[in-house]
Length: 143
Image (tube, rainbow, N blue to C red; front, side, top):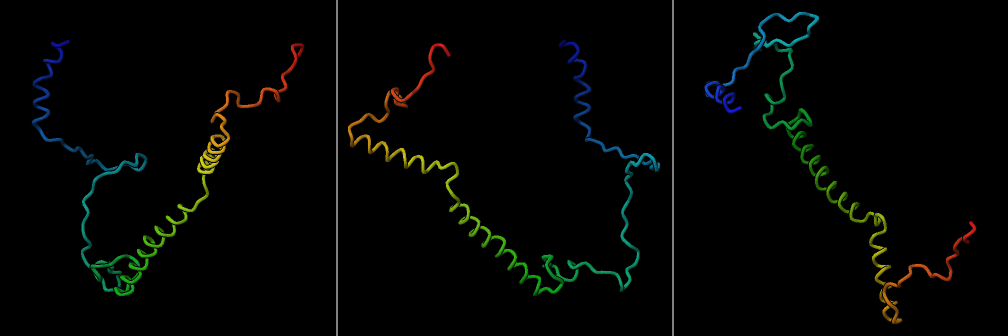
């Protein structure tokens, strides 16, 4: 086994010394294959006045809410206020006041009250039998 691994030693050194290459097909794609070919992207040669100009060219501080810079900034601030402050505060309040899922808190309070009552009465906290054996009706041996 070691003899096989030692044969690959020079190959590993040669592979690691060369940077990885990216191979891209330069052939024209056929209509049936649908493979993507890498092409160069060129900027348009001319720009007419009736073309739409990017909002980022007009206003570098564009936030995407409106074309008007003042309205855009105001809408951004209102949106973030409502989206962060109101949602976090009202959402957190809503989650805090949700009912007790599974009534776990109620069950613990009830158990604590029962333990206190049993300790005052001098009874053990937990009895040997959960149910009173005299009240359990068992089937007869015939059934």
